[in-house]
Image: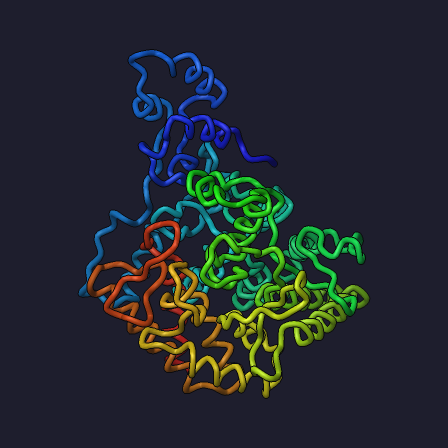
Length: 498
């Protein structure tokens, strides 16, 4: 499957300042053409030099602009947040698709984040499902898992979202966690139903392994390390500006000599979900120093270790003990490699690893809590991580994503629901219950405060100055919001039973 020609039409319109009509490029590439794109382009070429031609009129004549989801929903701030979320599930549900344009149609209903995000997003959906589980909407969880299985079968992997312009990259691989979540409701043997897709996802992330050698240290998503270990990094098969951010990326790349490398590193950061963060920069303060593709992220490799374990478990249910043991062995090797390259015993913390520079990154990030969440840290490692989380990450509204304060949205002072959940459950896994509860309470309090003031659940929050709205990033803060809703409900239930 290849991205459709709306991007190329967008390139054409760029020359005549499409941004004056759609300041957010994503609005244009999400627009639904009223006629075949090739016909629209022919008419544009025929009409553009006419003295009476108006680009705005032309675009609105041939495209239906998309609407932000949930932004017009009127909430009642006198209701508890949990009641608001229960009501919002239906607002954020999208029915099976037959829409033309850049949307990849999905066969079953699903939850979208909200705001400008009108499609399904890969890693967002796991955290949304946590809330759907609390709400008892198991059927919707099943539908969403089946949609992701459909994407694996259709595309070959789960793309960033179900848009053609996202083809070329995935997102943090939470599909195994989603299937495992569904198995909590329907029994462990359901893992077998999704074994083909779990295996295909794993193969996607490991493509290129056979071609690694001293001359080719990295291919696609895999990298060869000095001791012969193989770990993964984020990567995108494209090295051009993203259609959904075309204008901005053209401008960002102006001072860059190697523009292809720059665009691929931007896209790789988008695959990480942390778009953008100083975590991916060589110089913490310089966006143009982004080098995502050089970095072995600790969280990505924990997710893939979990995928290996889930595949092994599924093979165990099938009676294929040889295959089960193969994936157990792969998980053991990955754990050893994570400890070798990402654990720093002097600092008592997990760090990303720059395999090009052969050195650990220095950024302190919440990615360090993923080994705790997936229970692959030792008790001593977990205790050390907990000390740094409490001393350097904990703020009045929860946890900052990194200890660097920048204008990037995945740095301080911002906090994000998925990372709160990973950290809280990770800490609780190792007996740090009081710290976990404190983080949960502070996070839920800022959710409630902002809801009371605005009637909305936000995409992210300023957890340092809790009287301020979160900011930073390439777009305005969005409301809705799928994963914030899901994590809130899951934490509310977790606090009740813990």
